[in-house]
Structures are given as structure tokens and as C-alpha cells.
Amino acid sequence: MRFHDRREAGRLLAERLARYVGTDDLLVLGLPRGGVPVAFEVARALRAPLDVFVVRKLGVPGYAELALGAVASGGVRVLNEDVVAAVGLDKDAIERVAERELAEVERREREYRGGRPPLELRGKVAILVDDGLATGASMRAAALAARELGPKQVIVAVPVAADHTCDEFRHDVDEVVCAFTPEPFYAVGLWYENFEQTSDEEVRELLQQPAAA
Image (tube, rainbow, N blue to C red; front, side):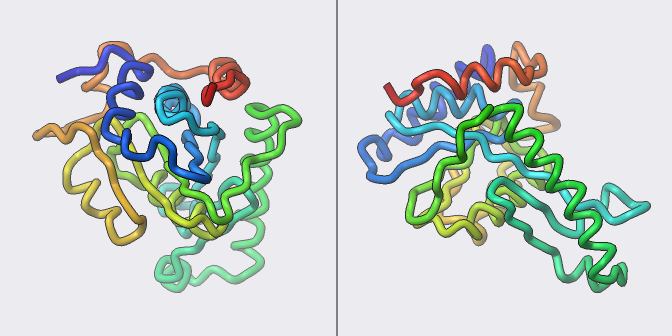
């Protein structure tokens, strides 16, 4: 099975989420950039509001691939205390990294939303959507950060992922929906005929459309 593109993947994923149609206080949040076209189709099918959820990893200075935490939409910050303790960073060093990445989160939110405020997550059922999961690091950071904003439920939904990656999320969120879990998995892009990079302009256009209409 291969998806034609992200929009088709979103329509197929929405079928797996059909039980959420009519759910009160439902929100669909796309991880930029590739998750937004998928999330747009999910939001349209579920008749739910669509927003973007930006997340940035906090890399250890000098070892950027090692994540000591993440910052995300809403100014949320989550830290991996084990990594923080292992590398011995002081609070000032963490603060400098967090401030830099939070500024990038805010810049991207302005870029994508314009002057529109983010949707309120408190008390809502939030479905976090991406175009697939490889390591799942970005989605895990997003899920933990979203939880800090007080939603009633956090659901992770993707068209394609490795089965073991989906399993790793189950203790962090209320539900994980992985529409297709091929074995062997290799990479997200292999399961799309068209996996061209989603542009910032496309993200802006999709967020401006009335997906829930």
C-alpha cells in the first residue's frame, strides 16, 4: 500500500477516526509542515477546527542531536530530566537554549497563522496529526507539550509508522491511531508516491481554509 500524497493519506486516516465525528470540543492539530495537509483532510472529514502545533527540540549545546527537552506552541516547555542530569547543564544554559527555540516556535506560528491566535486546548479532545512516524521524537515531544496545555484527551494519529514506534506512544497519550504499519518500515517517504516537501505557503493556505465547513 502506498498513498498518492498527503491529502489522500489524510482522507484514509480520517476513516480510522470516524467515531470522533460529532465529538464536542474536538480539535485537529497538524505538525508542520508535512502533517498539515494530512490534518486538513482529517479536520474536514471530522468537521473539526484545524490548527498547527509547532514543536522544537531543545538540543544539548555541542550535541544538537541529543534532546534535553522541547518547546512548543503555547510557550510550553518539557524537559527530559534524565538527559539534563546526565549532561550537567545548569539552569542558565537550559534557559538560553529554550529561549532561542521558543523564539523560533513563535516566528513559525506568526508565519503560519498571521495574526490569528492559537486555538485553546484546555478541556478539548486534541488529535495530533503528522504524515508519518519514523523515530517518533517530534510527535512524542508534541504530545507531551500538548498535555501541558490541559486538554481532556490527547490522540496521536498518523497514516503510516513502524508498529513498534506506535506502541511506544501508548503510555504518553490516550489513543494512538496508526492507519498503516508496514513491515519492514524503513522510512515514511517510501509509502508515498508524492512526498515533496510541504511549503510554508501551503501550510498558510490550508490553515486559512474553512476545513470544518
